[in-house]
Length: 424
Image (tube, rainbow, N blue to C red; front, side):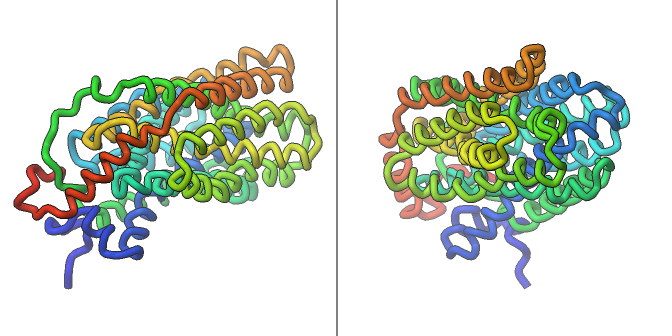
């Protein structure tokens, strides 16, 4: 009886993926499961935030601080996750980062004061910061010509977690311990799946020096800056939308859960069609479309009051934009050479995380203006800037075509002709 792929030395991720769709989808499923749990954890924190701060004996204003703490951890380790993908072991990077996430999302439910909760959320963010770019680079680099669809798989899984979270969390409220425990346990199971089924060897290629100067170019800088503004808008939204629906608009918890979950289901429904469209017509066009959706939704959510239908539509539009980091990463990978795809993905997520750090505090700072005005500024203005920057980017397809050619050349070589293996 053969060992699972993850325990064998004679296979690579690419060689397994090339065996057929079943093998490819098994690897993709295991790889994107942490994204599902990230989305679940994020929306669990957002939807249950009024009860989480009560459990920690903290004020509503501390939400901005907690969101910032998580974003700081995420941001600081995004570069590390992408760099480790290029330089060392892909599998170990994912195993370590998801393990960190598993432990500290679990402990978030048992934190009964603000200090403990802050520490748990920072370390939770560190885990996410490492596995986000590593997994997105992993997916985008299996088959470079299908990066749009591959990165969409991450966004779909993330959106599924966001969508399901309110329905799972709502029956337990005001108890927040059990939902966090569920995420922690499922994360531990995803670590086991990665250990058993993700091959030790990612790909075979000629070893090249990983240098950061090979990452920065005009296109990457514009893409990164646009994701910074999306990060501001996204964390302003995640941190305060539940408070807005429940405490400002006074919607029933069940109705608020449905509206909140629309953000997640939109990403679930729209990401793959957007990814397929990006691979077909050009990624820059879908990048711009996604930015436009973010602007329409971000500017509109706090403009329609308690009009449930309008809120639902705008939540769906804003949620469709959740594919933005995925398509940004795909274009970023197209814009650099193959041996630094992880580093450029980490850099994009790093800049994205910097924006997330400021999202919560910005909304808190603007609250004296009133919830609606604060929301209009904190979501609308960054979303507009995000969209405008997409208009100046290109698809990086010349790099993509060369990468695809290199991939085809790789497939024509024997193991003895290819230099160094990228292995554990």
